[in-house]
Image (cartoon, rainbow, N blue to C red; front, side, top):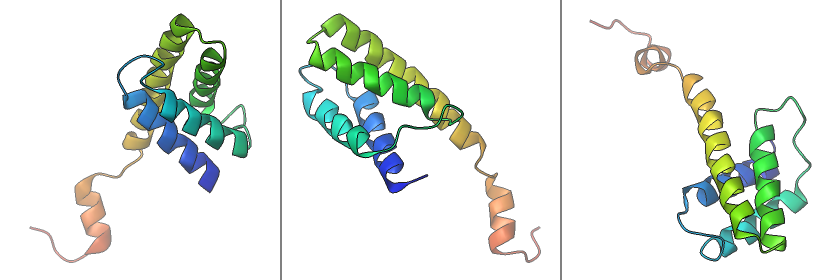
Length: 108
């Protein structure tokens, strides 16, 4: 993952966690727009594709001043990020396995 894509995930996650309508989320939407404008679009097979698409919908809704479209896109962003972070969490090794890798000594 590139630095731009990590910034994208950070901004998108912050926006997804923000409650409120488009007006309350304006600063985060502008940040997301800046980050997405400086990053290459994610490939179609990338795990972030649905997050990227939802981000584009949010930005477009703000440009159109469409609160209803924003609410729908914001909901899609939350769903897409939930799925993304769920996949990431499942990829984390179990704590006991991680401890064995760090300290392969005897464990009672």
